Amino acid sequence: MDDDTPDEVIAELKSRPIGVWGVAQIAAGTGLAVYAMWAGILQPGFRKVPLKLQVPYIPASRAQVQNVMTLLRGRQGGLVDLGSGDGRIVLEAHRRGFIPAVGYELNPWLVRLARFYAWRAGHHGKVSYRREDLWKQVDLTKCKNVTVFLAPSVLSLLQEKLEAELPDDALVVAGRFPLPDWKPCIIEGHGMDRAWAYSVQEQRQHTVNRNNLTATESFTVN
Image 1 (cartoon, helix red, strand yellow):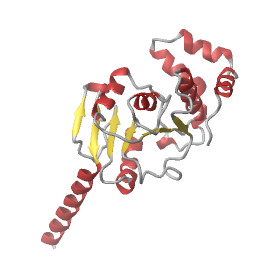
Image 2 (tube, one colour):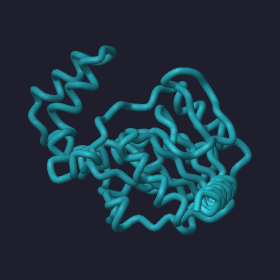
Image 3 (cartoon, helix red, strand yellow):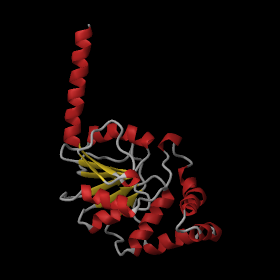
Image 4 (cartoon, one colour):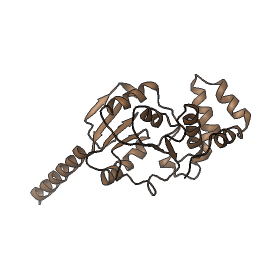
């Protein structure tokens, strides 16, 4: 899917009813801003998405973005952000030298919003935001750096895809919620700003050890 031009992005955003944007602007700086954005503009984009895969739009805080970048320090190559929202992780990753930096997001309004922010920051054409189905269209076999800001219900499903497809030297960084069954190698930050880093190679070894232990216990019982 090709990126919209800046003029197309702005026109698309302006085509929404002024009242909705007005409410979001008036409520800026409060919790009402997020709710207004979600209920009035972004939630309709999820109507065809299964309920358990829907993730309410909650922008990453500056501290969350910083913690994610800290965990990625020293890494090189490209970066993929799964559930990229308004694109701020992808933008910051590009600024820090991750090329290409790509965001995958199901909600079409968030994709357009992310492209608008990229254009406004002067990075239009340098980062990519794609509306693709993570489960059916996104191939992770060549991804070395992956970030995720998703709900626990989605993470429990996603970890299987990550372990099955990612190369051994990949690093996964989860923000806001950890991967439920993975053991992090590093944790950065506190509370809701916390981020967890996972080595795919270590996770695969954990899985092998767990399976071996289960098989041994089963053999002993029998």
